[in-house]
Structures are given as structure tokens and as C-alpha cells.
Length: 94
Image (cartoon, rainbow, N blue to C red; front, side, top):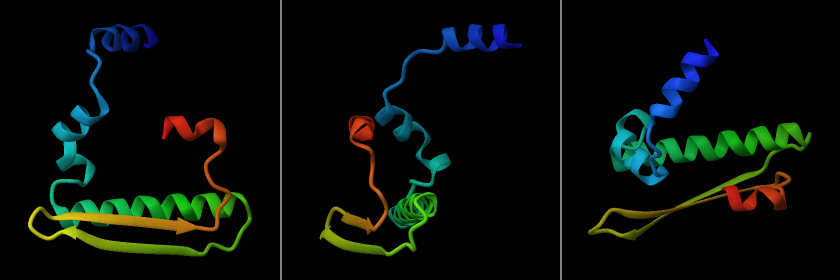
């Protein structure tokens, strides 16, 4: 079974993350501005809750949503929490 998986994987071409998201945004929850915002907030809150739970901290989560450009539907989403943060060695991977 592992051999089949490796053979299939070797036949797959490398796809940039941005290209993957663009081609699959409807599956990932990013096919409209409203759905994108809901998906992004949910993921950020889930991550904050998981990190606080793992650190045994009562979570405090702050969410700020601002419309940057009305004509182009550009928004800014800021999520802050009191969790331990991303380890320094992992920052480049984010």
C-alpha cells in the first residue's frame, strides 16, 4: 500500500500554495468574501483556543475586522489571544 502511495505522490507535480488555494478555494471555504471571513475567523479562533488549552490558560481572544477598501472588498482581520504564541523556530514556516 505504501508503495502505491509513493508512486502516486512521485507522479504529482509541485504546486505552489497560492496556486493550490486559487484552484481549490471553493473546497476550502474561500469562494466569497463572507465565507472567506467566516472561515478565517473560525480557523484563527480554533487555533487560539487549542493553544490556550494546551498551555492551560483561560483564553482571551480579541477579533478586529476592518474594511480597508470598499470598492475592492479588501478587509483586514486581526486576531489576538493570550496564548503562548508561535515558537521562534516555527515562525518562518507560517
